[in-house]
Length: 155
Ligand code: ADP
Figure 1: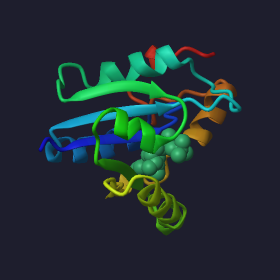
Figure 2: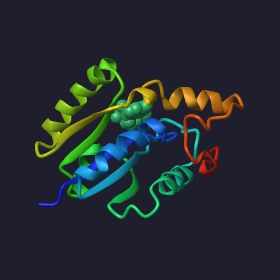
Figure 3: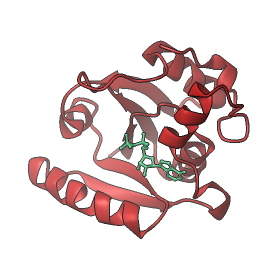
Figure 4: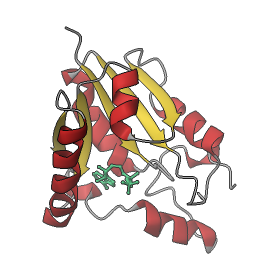
């Protein structure tokens, strides 16, 4: 059976931390789908199309990687794509405390899904999309935090 994983998130924007997690996960799966979750009650800083184009630019030619967006439950999105694994990144025990109940609840919703955690390398542990958004909104340069960020378009 093909090992298909979903890496879900809002990726607003996709940081060097997310990139780090994906590089670790890629050799372990036959296919990875980056699922950009669209939350209708939350406005994002960067347009969905530009977030997709941005991630494409980082993994050009990686055929086992797909980038999609979805609305609704992550477990339904996994089912739709035949994915039995969810990828999540851990920066700290705080992330773990947040992630564990989500993984356990997802397991109840869809028992075939296993959540796999990858720990962030130390140089990326401080990276948080919300902080990077604030820097960007205040006119700061985000090159240190987001590769190829010229692909991103302000919504
Ligand atoms: P959310 O929308 O749930 O806040 P994000 O889009 O920020 O999620 O991130 C998606 C995933 O990437 C989560 O598992 C999150 O823990 C992980 N992640 C975010 N930033 C980093 C980082 N700097 N290093 C490793 N993992 C990260």
